[in-house]
Length: 639
Image (cartoon, rainbow, N blue to C red; front, side, top):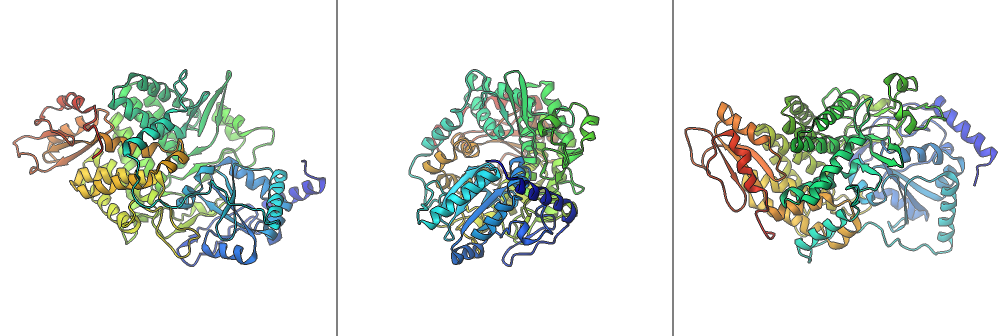
């Protein structure tokens, strides 16, 4: 259905209002636990109420408003770095008839999934934007994936209203599930096999990749899972797929400014990319290229590492040492005849700059920065370049300085002067509450820093964060961890998300090895046992790589490398450096004072798994050789 001439005129007037009336607005703070950071919520801020959608916050009161008024709720969940979300905002949400209908007959809610990761996890099955319709009592009646054009969206809204008026709306059977209660009845072995099947099923046998035509940066976690199994079982077939997939990731690189695109495809003879550059994708690319270089020594992977680093430092690095969340897929005023993909295909900086620079989203999210820290640590271990370790340490210290709360947990988002100048489609909500994904990723990043530097301060910070995570988010009755703390103002009870619990479990498991605290290992195991129900695992499909990796780790056991000696001693430091170099997915490296191991006149290394330890190793070149005895699983069953 085409728009009428009148609608086109109105649309043009609305676009003109963007240029004439857009200005900064201080967004009101919600009373219970969150404030919206300064910045342009939408391009229509400053316009009359009748010319924009009256977006409401994600809170219980909004649902009560819908229930009392008999209106349906329309929920739009997405992120700033999503080009489909921006098209929806620019085209559909500025359409005069869409605005009128949503304001008159619906209660509209808009959420940034990165600022509020608990909501993002709840609706992640529908990707971005997730378009969800609910009754006022919270019953979901429909959810859609991806943006919709105005004509089709209006038809959808009217159809839902007709069903409501006729009393024909029924509950959506695919609505997000409640938090599981109690441990699963299936064995961990069965769940691990289920995840393996779901991850490996989409593999293309001819090309050795997850997609017939290309590779996606979101495949990084799946590749880590595959690499773990290829290494542990010395499986040559899996190893060949790993090698091919690592090479496929090179297709994601921007040849001009560096950094990784969201995805790249090969259609016939033409290469096509999804030109979104998000921080999460850069973190995944760092991890992939670092391990690829560490295991193959191929210069092309080291060059790829440098490409990602150069992009991060040039475009997404903040003055405080943290990193901004994304860069938009095209300049603001790109001519209509040039697509975003065509813009990024320009092969010189001069050509690109002649059309403008894609704006950067200056929001800084802790969980995405924590993933970057882990990526830089892997880059340091692979190359020995201490600059990578310095970047990781500076980012971590900045987050701890700025966002560590008195209760011991770390906040997900914050404000910044640069953020105030951004024209955003969603507000940044600075919630004064802990999120599980944030604590888990930051905890893993701190342990990565400890294992690569030997600096005890990182271990102590990880301990404190673990205790705060357990104290605020752990379900002591039912087991596992909630996505965030319970609140009387939340529309729904908190979930126990699968992947976040897997990350939290890996954090606690690794910490238990460093600190010799079996109770933490038990919490880690229980977190997966509770969260990984067969139905939820099936529902999550390919988004189960972290859960699978945690189950592989639990089933195989750690490999602990203890350097017994003074960290300031040259011989001890040489042993530590030598232990950093070889790749091993279960490796946990640290300095340790004499006590558990015999005191000696010279520094020595002990390598242990849950079953046995080596004799003391005093020569650095013997560490990699000894590690070869720790490739196969230490166990044949779960503890």
